[in-house]
Amino acid sequence: TDQFDREDNFLAVGGHSLKVMSLVSKIYECFDVELPLEVIFNNAVIGKIAEFIRNNQRVHIEDIENIGEREWYEIAETQKRMLFIEKFSSVQNLCHITNQFVVKGELNEDRLNIAFNKLIERHEMLRTCFGIKDIDFVQFIKDEIDFHVSVFTCKEEEKDSVIKKFIQPYELSKAPLFRAALLKVSEGRSIFVLDFHHTIADGKSVRLVLRDLLTFYRGEDTLPKLDIRYVDYVNWFNRRIEKKKDVLEEYWKKVMKGYRKNNGLHKDFEVGDKREYRGGNLQKEISRELFDRLNELAVENRTTMFILLFAGFNILYSKYSAEEDILIGTPIQGRKNAKLENLVGMFINMLAIRSYPMMDKKFDTYLKEMKDVIVGAFSNDEYPINYLTSLLDYADSNVDSTNFFDASFSMQYIDTLPEENVDATFDYLDETNVEYENLRVVCNHYENKIYISFIYSKDLFKEDTIRQMISDYFRILEVIVENPGIKIKDISLDSRMSMDTLENFEEKDIDFQF
Image (cartoon, rainbow, N blue to C red; front, side):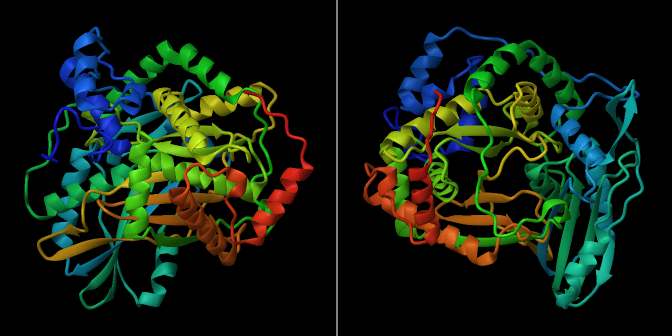
């Protein structure tokens, strides 16, 4: 925006959570100053941020450097977690990340394959595979791989079965660990499928792959130069974590002290070991009126839309589970360094957000607590989630490290419209056929609208249960914008579930540790 001055609040003029992290990264890049998140959230006036930069000593963080060509490379903790899950799980395709796009228009198959070969040359992770050296996982980068797009012709109603047959388990010792298919379902309409093993790509990587692929397809050479590689980042990050591990560990020990995993949300079905990982996705848009009022409430409380919506979901979760000590996961991009913005790789980490939505608290009080909790977690976000689960297991906790979170909550900021090409348009197809988590709530944030997706396991929940949950969630949002000072116990829901929850609260003798 060009409509701002020194006295404006960064959050008030559109500085959402992702842009806050970009601000921190760019300020370090320009001024060698680490800007703490609490400075932004507590006093995000632009002039005050400038004053902080002037008054604070410059710091030096070891730069990410090219480590040169090697026979093999060490892996990141996030990759290691995925490999262990793959190795010890009996479920096929557990660590896949699959995206579908509706293609309107005709794609030239030869040009598409040429574009993919240029893409593979640009991004080393698309030539990466894994093996074991000295009893530990390592990664290898191949100079060249044989790749082509699979093309199918099928009817619209047959596409799901075709895709299911197409997406088979990967042999992790052989590159590539990704595949692409073009399903021609009717004249001028196709389904484009991108499937990755999660060890080589995360959600942002998929968008980067699509952007770069279409750039090459158009015959353009306008992509930003890649100064470093993913393996350079891994080498840098692993050294960095070794130095910071004790400090990070102390923070998370304090956060998780006394935590015991509860039963979580009531499940409609008990499946045990027979879970088929069938996924469902129900979505609802926040109305423009509610969007504006939520935005006003966030600005008034010096917080972001993400934190506000997260707080609302925690209240829903608390009421549905009859718990006042809850733990919800949230994924983070893990790309704080500006050099990582255009790299394909697995950067994502999960943060454990523990909060206490007690019945007698006022919502605005709880919102302030949530802001502090999330700022603290994001300030210590480099601690790998597998370190945390191991830490809790070691502490004789009853936490199951293979299924740490009963639910997760995230927000995706989508700045771009559908990808337009010379002869085709790509629209993201938001379909969920497979789901490995119990429940994921994803807020897709466009410039002036938000779509809330409840992505759930059909093995555990009925569709009607999720519909009611969405209805109750929107009820909470409407109540809090009307009365931010309302006590949590006075936020009444429409469903019978909330009545059960209130009865359960009354029956419990809860002792909370702070």
